[in-house]
Length: 542
Image (tube, rainbow, N blue to C red; front, side, top):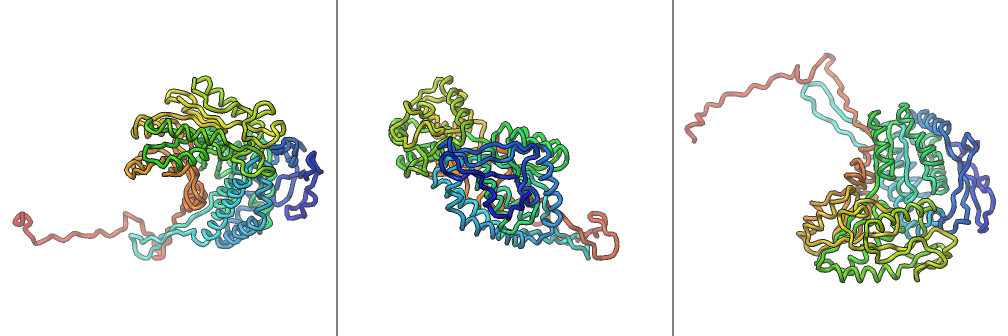
């Protein structure tokens, strides 16, 4: 075992086929870099250039997860007793290190999951913003003092940590989302076992090392790599074993429901941030140029691989033809490729081969429903590439942008999330019909409405069933100091980010401090206050 603060030179495994360094990554358990007990490893490859191996990582099993849980439990008493402002100072150190290393982390993220450099930059900045926000919250974990109904008694409330938190995040936001979860957990005094996403283990490994270099004590954050069905499942199984006090999960609705069932039967609190079929409504009063830009980005930014990506594009019949014509002109001009080698691309590859295969299956749903395909030919190949494709098709997992029209509420592709670069277009008769369509899917994460009619904007934001809404903006998520999350099948009502997330990682502790030296019982020993009889004949005033 090597301590996590040791030099990184020991991590270089070899030079890969691209001439770039490949890393031998490790789990981080109790501050030490450890191998999986089985000795098994898996690879992380660049989805834009599959021959580019970033490194190999431990395929963790149950004994590895248990070791991480042991370390988290052992570290909990000391960490929870650390003054919250001191915990905040360590988080502030993380922010400064992220700022210093931002350029390297951005390029690493782009290389590992294929996001554009610009998008990776925004995401790493969000991790920085999260640290800066919660650094100050270390001095604002306020409780209350409450007046007692009895004399010589003090009542007060305190926030207390929940205990050991299991953190499982998806690979599409491998920098921002784990910081959304881990940083508020830490500021509240919890310890963490973090299961990294299988398709972003190297960035997770780098971020965990930064946390320790910022002054985090050993055992407070423990990182295990592996598969969802392996290490991830073992971590959820530990809830049944009474070893996990909180679960925070970002991923599919199906897996989220399973986790919710396990947590529910054990009365363990869970935060579930799940899928979306996010609607964007375009009304006749909208600035169509702005609406086209917003819908285009919402649909195809990150290759459509965001839980907040546009699903159903709902366009009022009065502007339908003009909007679709202008929207399709943008789609046909889309620049796609590896942004480490080409500037100005809108999106890069799918996150991995698996995500690519799942996306192609999703497209089969649109075809089976009988929707009208306006654009898109599946996977980009040497012989099947749009004009705006800039990379080598046989090197990576690249997809055409896809648009399906004549979609109706009764179609499966209207109801189900398809994770990738595709949008389904629906025609609305009027505002009420558009709002109905926006609420018709089982999801409720993000939403948007383009209109310059203030009453329509008001009716939309009060009538939509979603956790987040943009007015004349795309279906984006919240900023780092606003709550992020959904309703219906998009989550269980918990929120990430901002001061609201503190509720998810702490519980309220009420303290009754008796100073009188004797037993006083509320409601029973309170002296009755007598009401005086008024010497007024009220009937005479009638």
